[in-house]
Image (cartoon, rainbow, N blue to C red; front, top):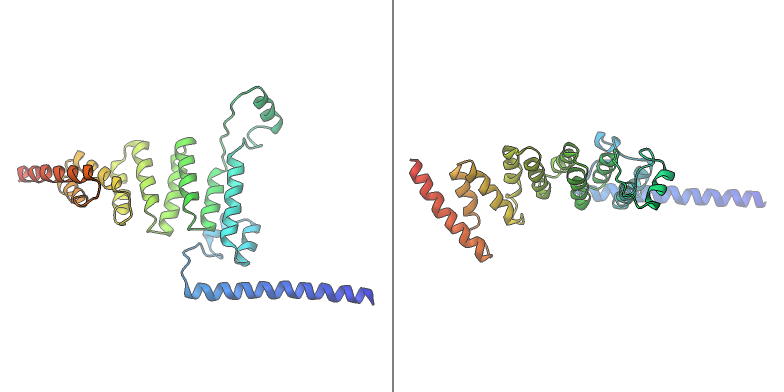
Length: 247
């Protein structure tokens, strides 16, 4: 009798879990039909390239953001210490006791970053943090660019990625043509920082592309900051003269 009761309890528990799972996914599917969440589809090549088993289960239970938070915590844990495959733990502890500063190569940082940002495409801090770490700390510009382009290709309105791309490409090889492309994308958005326009206008001016410099400086004629408003007025006046002289 007791064995039959235990079996029945296990059956009820399993049934409750299955019902909960079905309900959560039913609600998720209904919600996705009415709202666009702009996230990597669960059954896609981009997701399968980076996802872990724990991520899949959390997403199926409607916990995509939690899955991304866990992935980012794991990234920070990995990046905050010297990986065991680069230096044995005993050696790390020995060097730390001697007061020696140790910096890891963190070869897997790119994979950790890609997994996090594809789990939650709205996790902007994860994008900029990992891109900055790869570009300016690890000196791995190409991987930083891939992270930013992956984010930007999925969400065109993410102008912060364009700004980071512009900064990295200019620092990397003075590739102003690439920087112009990214900055032009960034200044399309009303909340983009005005300094992006200043930098773009100065690049155009340095290249003697006065018409485009005039176009960008004209965007700053009604800016609140008095200094930059007067600077824009001065630049517009000078650029109009240069254009006249070119004729």
